[in-house]
Length: 349
Figure 1 (spheres, rainbow, N blue to C red):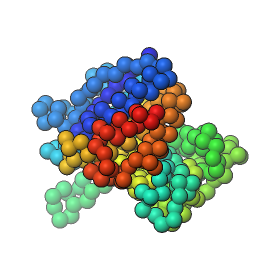
Figure 2 (figure 1 turned 90 degrees about the vertical axis):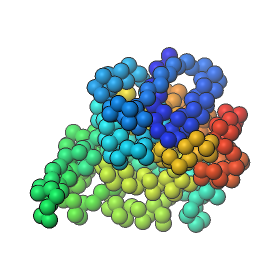
Figure 3 (figure 1 turned 30 degrees about the horizontal axis):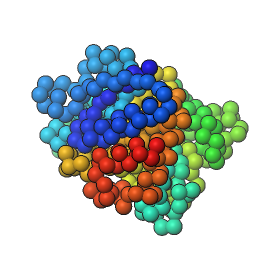
């Protein structure tokens, strides 16, 4: 019996989570696994009513679950940064979800913005360090509000944090067993402290994985090659900020935010799975948002829980309807409503 905490969140989050849970229920019946869910209203509406984001007792309650299924966080009436820091980052840091895992996989060449790229050309994974770097929230103002103001934001990297992320990436690359190539993506020529640590650690760990080919790319070059030669990549490992940036580019390369799913992974603990597209408030309640990213996130969650056959079944159903049914992956242009797309996935399991 799997125990899954569900955080529908803001905007279109509840709509896409509803479809993900529908697919999860159908997969459970086909593969005979049981689970129970509990909804948690950690969202912008709660914050507006109570002034609360995520408290310590909320984190303790979530520790009773094996996985977290998240819709989206972000409310138009809440100042940017409050919910993201108080809910999303607090979840990741408190539950030590130190890996952000982002598969970038093209299902239908017709939806790719790149010329002459096929599904076999775009199939890579970004392993992003998820608990340190610039997102640690360390820094200060000096002379705030004056003409001499200085804002300092610290990129905080520890040997332990960097090493466990890189080691996870090597193990994932070996398990994935595709090109068996791991690319370190950084900026060693300018960020000479943090990326010296990353490069040295990467080189040392690489000696333990002689079956894995390694290389390095500056982050600006990597963004260029994502567009020009995405077929070069297999698994990429990078820090928190660079990972945040290049995975959004990866989402566009694979067809858009409507298909992009991600996992916040604690390999020894509780992991959280979500569509990466955000709350999309302008589409809220219109039944037009694409739920496939949330459905793919549910598949990632099942694979993480050990139900790989069910996860593969969900992905295969998504691939089929993306190729045979949908006119577009964009909200309002799919040719089907949010609910109908969820029904199509269930019908094709």
